[in-house]
Image (cartoon, rainbow, N blue to C red):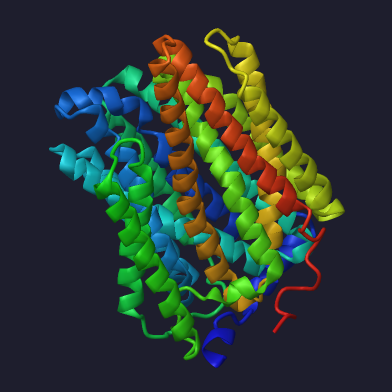
Length: 488
């Protein structure tokens, strides 16, 4: 197993940073990576409010304009599976430089785009940079932060990962008041440039790179397979019939071929995505739990704006402001949840968090055409707080049981499954919403009543995903049994 085991050789910088974390400080390298991750994730939701303007400027339909979000998601799904291998081949500084320069280039292309197609290309390039940044942050965190302090530092990461998407629509709404949608990219680009330069001044290389050959067959299967599968799932509700079945089927077959090929490559220690991570029971349980929680999380992120904008008539800006407190609460609680995990373990956080999530989604299933905004706001905040109690400990536990050589692969698998689970969750809830609404409308219900009826059923399904999270949370250990690396 030499090709894998000598990937991470805890060289001097690790010791330097470790002494920093023991005193309760977050290592500088993590702060820099969190700042960079915040900027690239903020970008995922920052275009939501600009869609009406883009439809006018480029004369495109609402369906076409939605591709601004879709292309981001599809690129992430295609690129993240490759990052486990990529992060082992390059140094920390090289990975950081590539991620941020790629993101900056995409931002520049999008900001100057003369046509909608060029704007989509720019968004795709941005997403490619984002896809490298997130596993890089997770992998580096696991390498430089001692186990006793990981919960707290993972909480800081969760702050960036939950506050950024929550703030995207609100920030873009404010920028759009000043003028063109191009100002959004004009705002993001200098911020990304400053963070890139700061990072390159302070960033140290962690571990050693391992120059193994790349399997281009694996790259092609992963990129085409995951992107096709996620695209097919995201089109459920918009398309129907044979065409959609073929797209999802092709995606599923390519993903299955990718997995089979990785298992074959493991015999020669050269997989693109090392599935030996799944031999660690706690990692596998964490993976399933995160997927179910993500299906509920993404589903509610889709359902609420549909309700608030299509039924209640709020603007995208007003909707963004209404759901922003939930995202902020989730993020700001992240570090506190992390500290609690370091002291008390996962069970006292994840199990109650999962139960509260089910209760809130069940309450959302009672939503009406005139439910007070204050109640929606309160329920959304409680939902986000419950998710915060789940995500931080589960991420920390799941990656913590892996030996260091598998950290980058574990991060990539988590990231890939998030994209797929988000697409599956959204697809299922949208189908339930549309089918139930259609049935009620056919039975004579008004348009508003039919929509609310569909929404209620969709939230019931979201709560059912939550029940899966509750069941899986019981199988999680309270803490990592032994230091990662002692397993092999």
